[in-house]
Image (cartoon, rainbow, N blue to C red; front, side, top):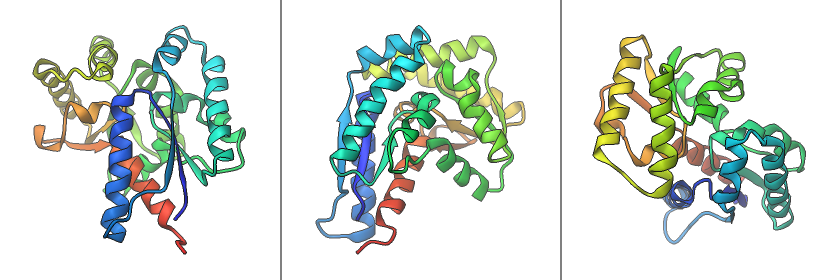
Amino acid sequence: MKTIGLIGGMSWESSIEYYRLLNEGVKARLGGLHSARCILHSVDFAEIEPLQRQGEWDEAAKRLITVAQQLEKGGADFLLLCTNTMHKVADVIERSVSIPLLHIADATAEVVKRHSLKKVGLLGTKFTMEDTFYRGRLSSQHGLEVTVPPKEDRCTVHRIIYEELCMGRILDSSRLEYLRIMDAMAKDGAEAVILGCTEIGLLVCQSDCPIRLFDTTRIHTEAAVEYALSGRQ
């Protein structure tokens, strides 16, 4: 079994889900007392979030590069960046190490394509919804048409992530807001919605709404389990 290097803490609320899902996935595949072989480096998100807000992505990348290199030295065979937003700097992180990084957007796109879908809605932080690093990758490398909510709804989605979900606050009123936004995306032609923030799955799940949801946290961990067990000795 390969050792998974986890760059977590952004936020730790979703990093808990990563650890749980990885271990559940390995146990489901191997049974018994098996669990995932992994190393978790959890950063202090209070140091990363201001860099996001101020657009200091190079500095944020430097900090995560240090973490990635430490995980490689610690014995990780590949990396998971346990956040959608910080995949904005995924390419520079991967270039800084000699081990692979499993990109969350690639893993998600492969699952979407297996369902023969073409047009998907994307929810996430304003960086994920508005910048090209995520939407552009889904479009240019995977041929998906990606839509996002209008500006006011993007602000609502972003605010709930940072002010509530990252703080461990799960509110029914916010769930209803997300469901309203997803319903509008479906009416605009989206065949499914990508939950493009690792915290959104803490708030909404498939049973909450009729449109198909793709939970990137779950997809990312499933891809990691598959990769970790490939060629297992």
